[in-house]
Structure formats: structure tokens, C-alpha cells
Image (tube, rainbow, N blue to C red):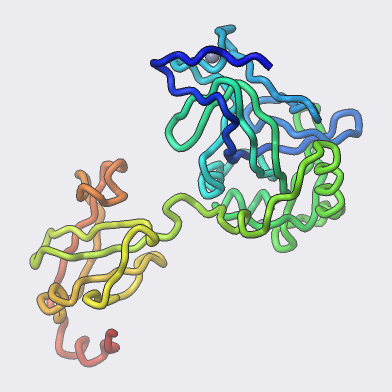
Length: 287
Ligand SMILES: [Zn+2]
Ligand SMILES: [Zn+2]
């Protein structure tokens, strides 16, 4: 295979890069095929899948274009596919010209390395779960195979997902994807926490972080949860707020420098009112 020159202004990789992507599953003349999620383009088994530029530009991908074989840096990012009609996820090897973008890559050539069938409904809800059954549906002249878990499977999903998956693996000559990696598919920022460290009056801002990126310490008190997201406050702050009913609001504006709501155009603020004596008597103790 001939590699293109390295052009200094474009970050390209000469070695293969391993990344993550989703596909939809179709049947072409009775044969299982992977298809692109966004266009009716089939990946030929046992042949490198080369990207083509809709604008006819070469080499592909171009920096100021959207062409290329797309892939994400981690399985977590696949939860962001949400409503795309998928059901197959896997590791993909990318090579040739590879451009980094946002949370992933656009490449000249790709081929799957590991594949697995995950429930399309669970994926749309932002989490990965191995599929149990497959449903055949005619969509726009194509036969699509939609994988479902036992909970989400409609009555028409009658084919075993295991048998479809093992055929798919042998057609593409690839390995199955590990269970732990499927479990890592979780909506971006799915696990969050609020933390309020400073500010002792109305209008001070709690910060919203991905749970894994913020360590809650002994000096913090968990006050409760907002939509399943835990709310923590430092003990020193809690001394000021202890006798108040806190209300967390989202208002227009930009949030703290490290807080996740920044790109939304909204920020969280803390409002408060004093508890009545009756309410105070009913409050559970906090640890
Ligand atoms: Zn292009
Ligand atoms: Zn499901």
C-alpha cells in the first residue's frame, strides 16, 4: 500500500489508529453487511473501506471537508450516536491519511477489528447493552436488521442475536467485542455531580462536573440529588447554608470556568430561603 506524504500542516498518522464506531446492519442479497449510519453505503467484507469525498476532492479526507471514515476515540463516545439507526458497535482500524477532529478521527481507510451487536433502544438512551434478538425490517428498499435486548425486543424480533453476531464475525473475519467495552458505552457526561465550594449567599454558583473527574473529599457533604445527579457541598459552606432550603436554578449566562454547562448558554445558580421550624424538625440528618 502506498502512503501519502506527510503534510506538515495536517496532523496525519502513518501507522494504523484504533478507534470506535457504530454501523447499521443490513442484508444484501441475503448476505449480512455492515452499512454506514449516515448513508446507504456498505462495507465490503475482507476489503479495506476507503472513504470517498462527496465533493470529489483528493486526497481524502480533506481538512476543510466532512469526508472520511469517521470514528470516535473511545467507546464512551458511541453513546453520543443516540438516534442514529445503529446496533453494531466495534473497534475499527484506521490508516492512510487520518485527521483528528473533536473527539475522534476521519480517515482515508478503515476496517473493523472487533464487532458486537448492541440493543438499538439502549444505545438511543445512551448506554450499551448486548443484544438478545434481531428484528428484520424493510426500510427504503433495504432489509435492516435491528438488534434489541430482551427488555426492548418487539414481538417481531425472532432471530437470535448470537447467531447473527457469529455470522457477522465470520463474514468480516473479526473478533467479538469484549463485554467490559460494551459496558463502557455511556452517554457523555452521563454521570455527573454538582459541587458547591464557595459563595455564601444567593446567586453563588454550584459547578457541574463529570463524576470521574471530580474527587469528593471528606470535607464535602452530600445534600441530596437533582435528577439523579448528586449535589455536594464543602462542610465549611454547609455551615452557612444548613438552615436554608436550597433551590438550584438554571439561568441564562455562562457558568464557571470548569463547569459542564458552559456551552449551553445557561448557568446554575443557588437560591435559598430559610426553613421554618416545622420543616427543620422533619429534615433527615446528613452524613
Ligand atoms: Zn471531502
Ligand atoms: Zn435495550
